[in-house]
Image (cartoon, rainbow, N blue to C red; front, side):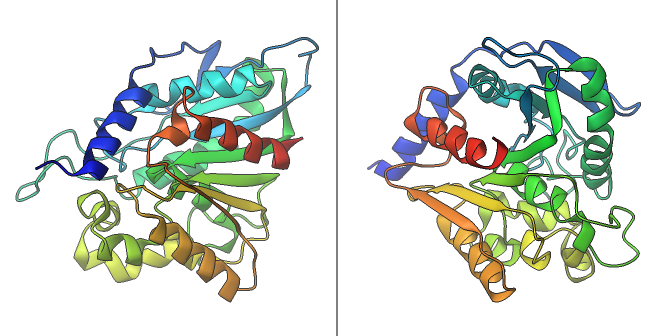
Length: 293
């Protein structure tokens, strides 16, 4: 007997991944590794002159694992460009393409390279966008990310509260209008309890032996308050990253004295948030617009 929740999730994933990749208008490298690249999408519509459009930075998901790259989120990037945003779709180094000994599949993330790349990309973006995407206004930057990319988006907005001595720490808050995290892996402890993505959070940190030491440098729930406007969008029927993960993050923010907006969508699972054919994707665009414009 099939599980209706699993069937729905499979159908939603099939819909999200059925869109052909959307080619960027320009690309630029922020480092020497092949994965250190950003694709840029120019805003559609009249009046898209220099500095006319907010810049939306997109960080893709895929459990920080190598098989999942930025191509699967290009339909979302194209959709946002059609809404009038300038879009930067960031690639970054992910886990090995092959499983480590004793692992059940490709390992999630690389420590420290995954975080090195996100920090470097964010730092390089204003300069790269000035050349590759002159329509972008970096003073109106919103970061969004889906699933594992949602964790990276929250992390990118929290670098100024990283522990002292962190190589990624900023002296002050990043110049962001806000962050919109989509079904983010936002609380590592809860994610591990629920076995989200086969223990991907622990793998990202390098395994159980590094969990305690590296958690304060990576877990969004430990990097609060940020002082950056933050919204979380999550499907109530998400079985990939259950909404309890987002709810725990929002509760941690409240305990730290910060209000994080939480939009829970009825009848929505994990993938409609990045599917331009789904109503949930329009909700995502509206959340970004509220911060950006």
